[in-house]
Image (cartoon, rainbow, N blue to C red; front, side, top):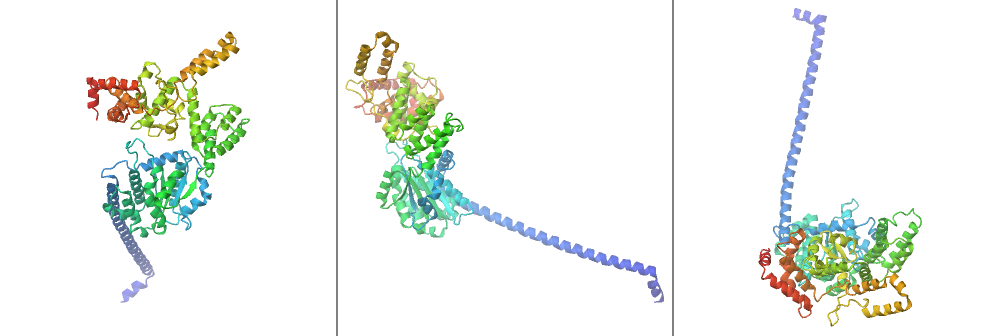
Length: 615
């Protein structure tokens, strides 16, 4: 005990013991810190494991939900469009095309239009059905496109207080489809109904699930049954919070095919929460109101959308070499004059506006521009006839023949033709071929630069009339009893020329008469007598049948891409054109020529082979 006390009382030993005590305390703290860190790491790892597990579970649930959603989509798609349907969503392409034509600012005047704002906000006083009324070329499609874009942006914006789903349909009526019963109303209503409801289902998942459970019970060929079971009488609709916005453009006279639907939506607006915009002319809405026993709130275009016309005029002037630089002397004043007078005179008609601007683009002086503006303002049919008269005066004889050939194909062919196909068909006009009048310039180039007042090339490469009315307004070819074509009443007769020649030869010395080239002038006028733009309904199908016959008979020698494509048309539709020909009204010479071609068709081995080998 003594030695222990002696040892512990030693200062050196005390110092060592103190150091050992400090080291031990430090070691204890380090062990505690390491234990704490290990515990924290374990807790963190545990939390991360829980998060990973939750993520994995959520991912699995999402995958299962995606598979289930895809199952719903596939089921509805199969019922609506068929099991292996492809490219059925044509409405997207139509919207993209129309958006590309919109000018900045188009439709912004709707912000101050109470009819539209009340419809969009669902005001109690507003009807859920809003009609955009206007004639062809009034800008209905462009305005509908702007409204769709506006609704889509509003749906995605933070200011949107309620959910919404937007569906739309641009019906680009194809007069070549089902040519013997063109676009039956029931077929149109069926196509539009499926397209619209499919879009709503794509945007609103609860609605997709709802109709997936109902579509097996629906007669998808009956538009009324489609709407009744999937929307109007759908018990799930009140529980789906979204407001449905539907925009339909281009129904025309088929509009009353949806009369029952629109009447039901209007009568039960609070439950269905569905708002519809539909475009049409006055007659279309009159028919709709009569068929549906309802009133449609109409937004009439004309002066109402004059701001859009102004934007179009300004854009066109900006693209003109003579008017695009407002800093040049007189240009700013001329632009202001054109904008003011053209906006007032055309009353919102894009066709007349475009025609006037195209004429202005081709002149240089202020007096010529004023003359163009003075001629604007006539009704559209008069404007179209004026355009035709202008072409009659400026086109060559061969070009008029070519225009008339195009008219036959655009109006009476069973399928739309591309520039290549139609160029090949025109070359089968033996009269043009024999006279050496076939142009070396491409047909597409001539349509865009020379014939644009009458024809246009669509985005899908089909050739059509610039406006549908042209097909009805082009003068009909007239014949006298002798069979000689005397054209329109404006054509100059030989007797009239004889009177003028007699007068000039009386008052003018012979040298002056010859100096002015009156004889050549009169000869040109007489040549024009039988060369004018017209349509020939009595012989149209016979002419097309003859072109088809030439295409088949020429099958082994002409293998150009256009000729090959045209030959497919010829073999498919030859007998249809023959069947549609009214022999009692057809021209005798054409019938004789067609008879010779038919005889060759059934006697020449190459022609029989071409006909039989067609798909």
